[in-house]
Length: 219
Ligand code: MG
Image (cartoon, rainbow, N blue to C red; front, side, top):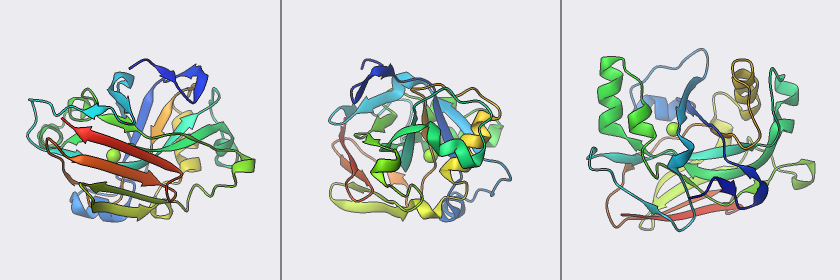
């Protein structure tokens, strides 16, 4: 994996911001609490893989889950942007998987420790093709179907209308604390239905009725 973004050769991937607990039913299934501000964590950019690469199950975990998510690619450096202007910082959208070693995450949560190990392992950020996001594209980012199937069985099927913190709010919030750079990615949280993946599984994820698709096998 190089850090070059094949669709935008002038750009490299940067920081990967992830939002947790952003769909009500997923909060329920995780027996988590809704938060006043977005829950933010990071993944290393080396965790990115692209279409047709392989998810490597790590020896350290026996329970890796898929979390299908809308992912935004930031196209310009952004600090303290208002919600009204926030979407102007988005260059493109894609479907992505926030893969999670659930056993490690549960342990970390119980101990009050960071989630980094459970979220940032090698190959834990698969990304589909990017679709341009601009006025001409005419995409309503808060009304996109999003789903993932494993070996042909639908496991998660939702719509970005279910996001508690909308993409504009997330970007405005992040940019009030961090300087976003072009090439940064934002994973925006997952709807309900997360479940385990196993060696040999074939994963297919889609956003916006196949505007962005992702196909990876599990090794
Ligand atoms: Mg997630």
